[in-house]
Amino acid sequence: MTNKKVAPKSQVVNKQAKRDYEIIKTFMAGLVLTGAEVKSLRHGHGQLRGAFVTLKDGEIWLLNGMINPTNANKTVLNEEMQIRSRKLLLKKKEIDELATAKEQSLSIIPLKILTNGRFIKIEIAIAKGLKKFDKRQKIKKRDTDRDNARTLARK
Image 1 (cartoon, one colour):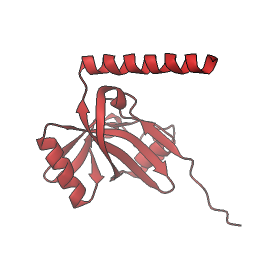
Image 2 (cartoon, one colour):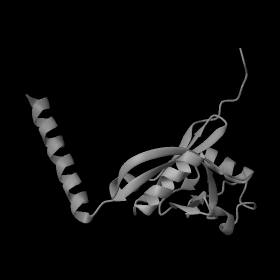
Image 3 (cartoon, one colour):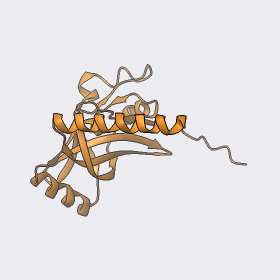
Image 4 (spheres, one colour):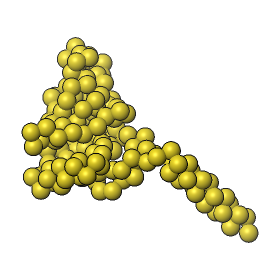
């Protein structure tokens, strides 16, 4: 028997991403964080609403991703530290693929931050923005599928 501490799995999800974008391809990346940020993310204190990924000097950065402090690290994570830019860790081949997607006017968006074991990863995606018409069509299709499933279940 081992008495290893198993960290609880928590995740911070960008709920608006799948509604506003058509996901083309996803990537898993590492995050460069401080100790206080890691502690907050392990407790699920983060927010990806309005966050986006950009390329600067051949590196990938997460902007506007907010990490809220816990009671234990309020003094360390001041307001400036909560929304600072964070570097993402990817392989060179993946960075090149993201750069070509950016040149094709596609968006790179964060989907979720996962804390599995000792690693904290972020799932990012190459996505195409949906227009209002596309969103309405998607909702209409979902409603008709739900109605069809109900009628089949009654029979």
